Image (cartoon, rainbow, N blue to C red):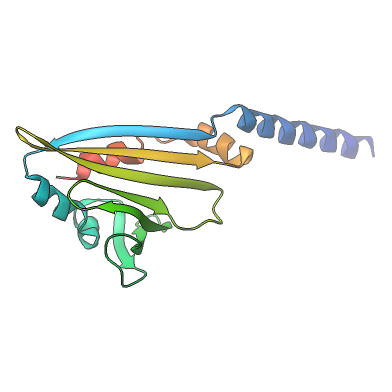
Amino acid sequence: MKIVTVILVILVVLFLGFWGFGVLQPREYVHTGSKDMPLSVIQTWFKLTDINSYAEWHPDIEKVVWENDLYGLGAEYTDHFKSGDRIRLRNTEYLPFKRFVSTIADEELPFSASWTFELEKIESGTRLTITEHSEITSPFIRALYAMMKPDTNSVDKFLTYFR
């Protein structure tokens, strides 16, 4: 009986320690990155908003499936990743040739995120700036994210592959 009590106490301490570690991690993250494109704003916009072509140039994406008949504001689509993960997105802001925002549409996930894509005309073409705003509500998921955080964030990855 004493062994069971000791094991239970150890498990509770580990559980509380992991939860406490998660509470100390940031709830919100913001990542921003830019890339100068040798294309016009119009060319960059059409390439950027051609969601169907993402699987052709982004090595992590297997396919993209449209979830409704909208294009632009309110459009919903699901990115299917080669890892087996899926994420449903919705365009929550759409200003042609300037800016659009894709937001995670699944509200039951333990995190939320949005990606703002902005285009700026520059002398050599177009500057694409992407800002990711993410929030992780669960202390347990925050602890896992802190321990397993990838070397690069989604903004850096996207900008690396987008040409």
